[in-house]
Length: 217
Image (cartoon, rainbow, N blue to C red; front, side, top):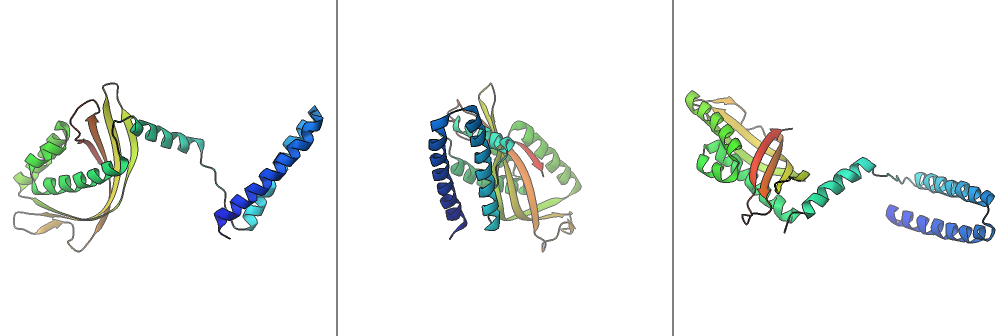
């Protein structure tokens, strides 16, 4: 019997016992029987746990803290008009790939359409420094291991901010003006974790999200 089915059957039996027991004790509803009810309920619960452990089953309770974090994020996402999580993550992965490629090539025109002014400024500073030193970059995004929403907020100014953690496999190289590799290895695939935050005004007719923050994790 499958583990989940065993739990369901066990719970069904226990529920029947509890109902029968409550029916009996309700006939004599005094303080002593109320205490016995609590004690008996505790005994039944302990019995369930022991039986489950004997069968190799593990019953875990999600902490209140984790439930609150998940619920808060989901509630925020539900407040964003016409928001679809799967569609958003699919678009975020495409944006990640395009921004990574554009930054590597120094394509500032494309970057300005996808990132905020502050991020564009930081990218430009790095590109200017590389150009002055005669350094070029090559980035090859092999695949995504995962992409998940880790946080969502809506400000008083109706700005929705969604943070996404990307785990991807990449090959990154830096070359000097002579084309020699000075950082990285074209045969070495890196497993990289990036945490990016996207933002848009939920009252705007413009559906596009802009990258407003990046960091490595």
